[in-house]
Length: 74
Image (cartoon, rainbow, N blue to C red; front, side):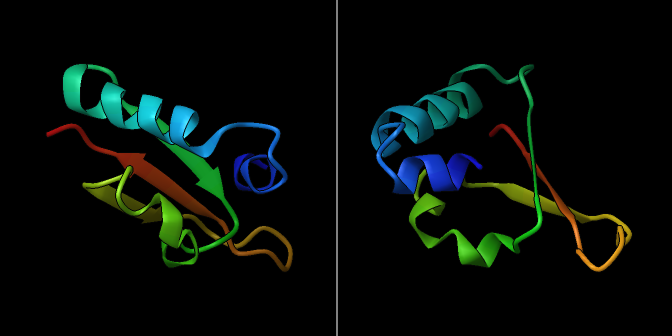
């Protein structure tokens, strides 16, 4: 949903992803968890913002394979 909102111009990509990067870099005790049905490789434009990503695979739910993305601080 977040990726779709950014693609449609509902959210500014630089503002949202920049805020997440700022939290990752400057709030070491603050962790961010993103969940989605796509692999992280499908979000190429996020790569420069979301570094140190740990992918945690979860079991399939129906026919959709899910992923958890745990964003680790530095």
